[in-house]
Length: 610
Ligand code: PEP
Ligand code: MG
Image (cartoon, rainbow, N blue to C red):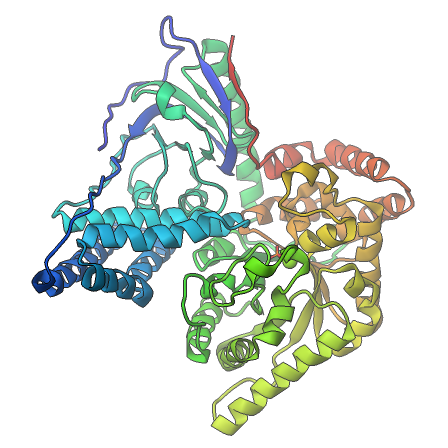
């Protein structure tokens, strides 16, 4: 159900206290407008039984509801103007067409003689439960996609439709959670902000909000209890703050913040189509990290020179059988065609640990999954799954510049085995008479201290190396990257990390092998000078970070960046390194640090504004 009306933004409502809460800024910017509360009713489902003679009719009723839901999404897809949002809706349609889903529901209807609504709920709850337990936010977020689709099909089974949300111009949409379909439809309305109680960086709603440049803050628990449609509201998605019913001075202050941010964005976006060339002429290639198909549009939009890390794990999600060679081929072919003439670096599957899969039954036996059977180790054990992906990628490379990247290499013996698998995949294609590219560059990720220490040896056998600082920091400093209790130890400027990065770039230079960096460090404007100064010439990051990093590089010279890196390499303590880097970068790029990096993670805080 949706309710709403629109009023002009004004001062605090008479006699009602203003309220400020912090959450996760998922789409940057500042929006000031009038709250529009969206309250999608949760459809309650009761268990119903059917008689055996009606089982097939019930199966048909279920199939008709799936068809109806797919049709509704098709209508939404046609109504939305932005190409990439259509990809998201297409992905939702594909989920509804998933054979595992329909087979599971139909089996329950036939065997347990239960109604379609209940059977659907049971099957999707099992899928959601597995996803919700995942360490990795991306997988947890997919559970809400499944929940939204369940609601849509349930409504269709009841002969109801999930209507569009139509906020008035100047509205800030406030909801418990928003489906991608809801959010994509806002493209037609003049929404100035989004606030949700749940959802994170990788929710589809967040991705859509980012590509539409609507400021959005998630994780504001209980906001629906304190806000009403028509309340003046501020969404500060730079620092992740939401203010309901602001007083006049707060309003004036945030108006100023919004104007400053908008001016900064304008300046940064003006360089959108230009390359990241430093003042002395050094070209730093800026590429995008892509974790789901929908981010490709964002990569192009933000001026990425291709994709430096294409995470392929999502292709393996929610499947009972692994993707076939043909699945990989078709998928990768489509991606390279869309990004041509820029290259796409496909990382072979990095499953296990924080990226769960139902395809291999090992998780329950692992006490330490981050140190267990993950990533390339798993690929070498599940050879058929690995070979199918390699064959698909080698074939897709015929259609555009594609590179293959092997994750979590520990040293020479693993690299040899992985390269042997690539050679075997080529041989299989040869025998099968399939067209494939013979000269596909094969590179490795440097994510373990052992690989960084052996980089001079590994470099002799590969076409490129890419430093994955997310794991490199985890393994070097022995901190679980997803454990909040030790998050304070996760310090990218630790001298040990800087030395390892330097070793890798030096090894790359010695052997003429390009070195990139694709961990989160690449997206943080505080580290740009140090990384370039340490010799990294290619940075790959989430697409929306590109303009700010580009702007810093274009305003800097290699000499000053190298000087900072050398100064920091000489210090003994991480605290001193941080101080030196932050002081230098804040003095030169204060605005970039404020707007480009910012706090992007939830801080549980709730307070009254005096
Ligand atoms: C990394 O480890 O830095 C990396 C980019 O890989 P992922 O975050 O997918 O583990
Ligand atoms: Mg990694």
